[in-house]
Structures are given as structure tokens and as C-alpha cells.
Amino acid sequence: MTDLDFTAVAFLLFLVLDPLGNIPLYLSQLRSVPEHRRRRVVARELIIAYLVLLFFFFAGASFMRMLALDLDAVKIAGGVILFLIAIRMVFPTADGPFGRSSAGGEPFIVPLAIPAVAGPGALSVVLLLREANPDATLFLFGAVTVAWLSSVLILSGAAWLQKVLRDEGIVAMERLMGLVLVIIAVQMFLDALRSLGAIPAAKIG
Image: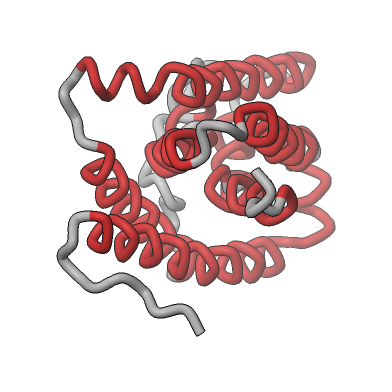
């Protein structure tokens, strides 16, 4: 699709995957895991998250139709969820954007794969991008993969980034990304209302 910008789409997906915001969560969850196992655990959780993202990318629309769910409902729900996550990014709490996580043992799927990386916001954005651009499958698949690989690089080096940026730097970057995500969430909500005819179409020019 010529009207899509690869960098913009990949950056949007990078924002909703929120690897910087997930650094504290990953560090806290891996604290009780033996050091020689940590890289394997991170790799496993990120691969699981990628597979979930791909499932919603390729089969999400069919899954939604099977449940008789309307795409506009997904847009509104996705916008609301993104907005709530973004607010917690702008005004961080001790529990992180996804609330308090369980401690002890080796994490499996929850919370590192889902909802930290493949959360409801990311899944709805992936689904909506695919549905809105059915002729750009390869383009969007590449954007999802690039955003995921960027998350892999950041979360694999979470301990190093924590030392370099410190808590203050990570919080500052997460707040900045949260502000951008607030705008994206509101835009998703407005687009859904326009498609339903609840508000007039946006004027161009």
C-alpha cells in the first residue's frame, strides 16, 4: 500500500509493544530466575509473544467473525485499552503499566509474553492494521517483525539499559512514549466513531 509509511507503522507497533516500559517488569520477574537461565526465559517469552501477535495478524479477523464481534467494537475497545495503558505510562505506578505481577518461580507466558508484549492493545492494533490494509500483508508483516525485533534487542539487554539510563531515564522515555500513545488511542476512538457515523468525517485541507 503506497499510502502507508513503513517507519511510521513499525514505530506505532513499537510503541504498543512498549519494550522500555517493560524493562522493570522483566527485571523484577527474572530476579528469582538463575542467571544462566535468564536469556533462555526472555527468548522463550518473546517468541511466544511473537507467535500470539502473528496469530492475531493472520487469523484475528476470522476469530472475531466466529465470535460475531464487530470491527468497530474492536477499534473502540482497542482505543480505550491503549488509552488506559498510555495513562499508566505517563503517570507510572510502582506496579507498572499492567498492574502488580506475581513473584517467585520462573515466569511462563504470563506476564512477560502476555500481556507485557502481546497485550490487548498490541493485538487490537495488529488486527486493525491488517483489516484496514488487506493488500499490504507482506508490508505489515515486516513492520510487526521489525517492531518485535526491536523489542527483543531492548528486553534482551534490559539489565544493561537499566544501568545506563537508570530508573529516571527509563521513566522519562516511557512518559514520552505514553504521550504519543494517548494521541494514537484517541485517534483510534475517533476513527471508530466516524465509521459508525456518530461524528462527521474529518475535513482535509
